[in-house]
Image 1 (cartoon, rainbow, N blue to C red):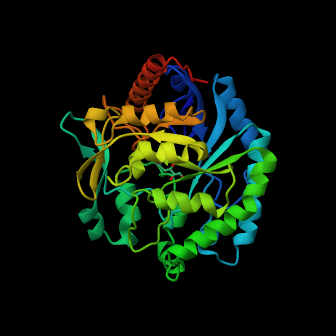
Image 2 (cartoon, rainbow, N blue to C red):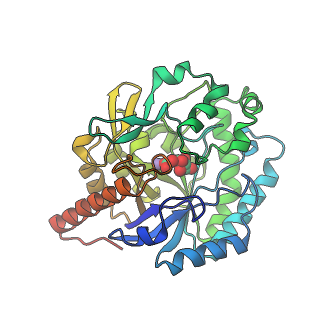
Image 3 (spheres, protein in one colour):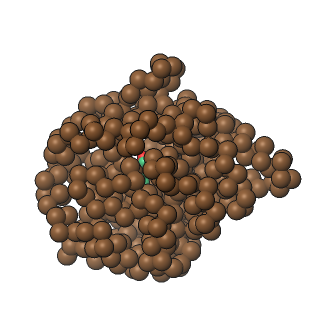
Length: 360
Ligand code: CS2
Ligand code: MN
């Protein structure tokens, strides 16, 4: 495995490359370009400059999260072919600068959704939390403001203000789209981009829907094991793969994450590892990474990755806000660095228990 850390860029992140470089065992950052409008081509010069900046800090740039998918592709609207061509060009450009994996999601309208971006925990830290009854009371037309009010002024990934400004229109565009339509539109997209991925040596890794169930009456198709099975069959090619996000899928206790890792191992290109504490069905908060703080057994998750000889990329996912840090919700330095130290420790322990060193 290769340990990585998500980074939003020098203008848009409170965490610096220098700080990331000092976290033990981190080989590279997972970056993005939030200012490029969804659907447009990522220009070579921008990618070159980003790579140069990251490499000169002693880090690699092999994973991008996310190259977001235009809603016209998700709804199958008339403009989709142009956006798919642009996506293929972006894949080509990224490959020219050494990018190996692109993480994306296929969630209609919203990226991850939470009811609270700073829920206080008993130890004085704060965490992202989801309470279904609160979400049920939110008017979807006002969710963008509800989310923005807790976001410390950061534009959250997938919640771009220009898209949120036309929320009504976006909702309307999904009115006649059911789950099967959404899956057919994903297939249409994958059938066209996977040949380009093969040609350029880039793997696509879809992130599950977060939370992993339908919200606001919108269709969702990456929620559980059966969905992953369907997804991989849409285009049965190693370049059509998964970002397995433990804390995201694990919010549904029926999703057995170690079993999913063992089943789909070769098609998992990117692992997000974080823990969540399920308080009651549909309610959870994001705990520290430690197994005993949450509902997921992180040791068993690491063990499963180790058993399948996982050689993809790993990153800790969201962290709590601790030690007075102010940062983009979920993406401070301290708790994610603690998460890495813990994951490194588990990995080394399993390495030594099995006599099999598998760190790349
Ligand atoms: C989330 C998502 O897992 C996460 O970190 O914050 O924003 C995720 O990056 C996207 O859904 C991937 O496309
Ligand atoms: Mn994730």
